[in-house]
Image 1 (cartoon, helix red, strand yellow):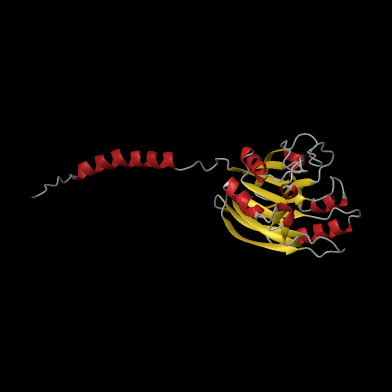
Image 2 (cartoon, rainbow, N blue to C red):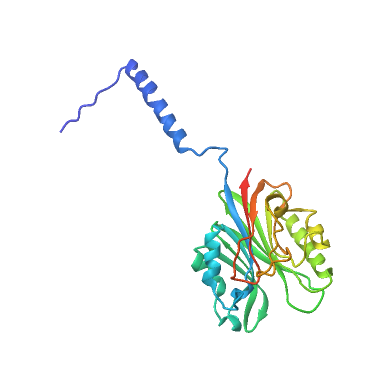
Length: 275
């Protein structure tokens, strides 16, 4: 079988170019995202009290429901058990990852009741690498740490820090840990850094002032009201924070404190937008 081809003359090729190329250009423009389209994502910080709610019942499903309801993309969790007796030796990070459909990074800070106890990060973005820094403790007691996770957030690298620092009277240890946080943040030049956690100190405290030298307290620019998170049943203090490194390519758009009975703390949620 012979196939016959029709060859275009020079004028025919010109007509074809003027007909097809503009159409191809319009199709390409329709597919390409706008360069100035806002890219937002949500961050939550939540001290989950090892999964025990105000009723003292261990219930990871209601924590996961809250995370899904608030559409959090990255979640900093504190007081997380793994293989601990009081939570029936359950792998709490793995359960929360399965319930939320998010990737989990867990860091052990303290061996407790035959298991591990520390901080975790849940994320829907790819994890590029992570590490955990144990603070230099000034007094005997629970070892504290700073979980550092580098994420690929829609093609941009974001450093996400999660911590839970000392609660005891006297702020020397909190100040020392704040200094280690600032030292760690300086190791990530040129990258936006979001710092989350339970800092066990209030706005205006020496701990808050020290962290504010390098970070923006996002509640002050994006939140409404007092932002109090503890205790959950009648929140009287603001000790849970989402911080953003100063001069970064992110803006906090809005911040809020959802109601919940899933822990003795309330979570904080902040929505960010890339500039």
